Image 1 (cartoon, chains in turn yellow, orange):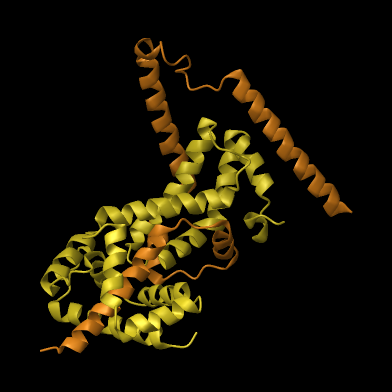
Image 2 (cartoon, rainbow over the protein chains, first blue to last red):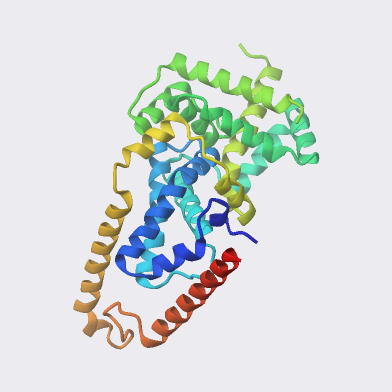
Length: 212
Length: 124
């Protein structure tokens, strides 16, 4: 079976051999990986975490290459494991760390999902979601929403992320403006935040009610 | 003033949006998912492209230098502290022991062998 690297015309074994070689060979192997996967990993991170600032996504991506080099240089890298998956998984974990570090979560995992369940009870939106779950489309719907966020300017994406982080509390628009300023250095107006919330909800409702 | 139904609807939408943003944090990517992402051509957002560009040139070269320097500093610290750690660690130099070297060499040969096989298969 072809490895992930082979699907992109790279021979994973050749890359591994390069990593095991001289300093110059190791650097060349890393350069080749970076040229082929830096953008792909960034793309993966933005589709998973559209609310994470792009510079932090880029940091997470670079961290994955740094982690690989560290493992290689210290002789700890396990050459039996798939190379490309290592990069994606490290980038994923770093991105989650970044998101949690600057996020302002009010609830832990189980309380969060309990609250979601309670809020959805006896609502049309809850019924629509149940139908998507039953048809196995829920993950696709969630991805459509995240992709939609990527079409918004970064400040508006932050509105969605802050609403999500604060759930189930509804954060006052003033507070959202302040948090966005702290995160991005740009301060939106209350009117802009209200309009972003409206646009985000309207779009999500459309996505939720569409047939997949 | 919003009526109760509108308020419940907004809250429900917020709940689902929050879940859509939070869900990816809960599950590590699988090999299949990584495969799907890795084989498709990336179409980064303009902000993503800018962030990637902002990393500047020679990213790999720079990260190698930074990592190598950090390793050197930490190795030096370990060597300096060797008398303290001596009872627990016999190898503060950071160099691999002979068993690890042998394992590394075995693995290298194994990979080399696979490459040779692939090349000879390609020739045929």
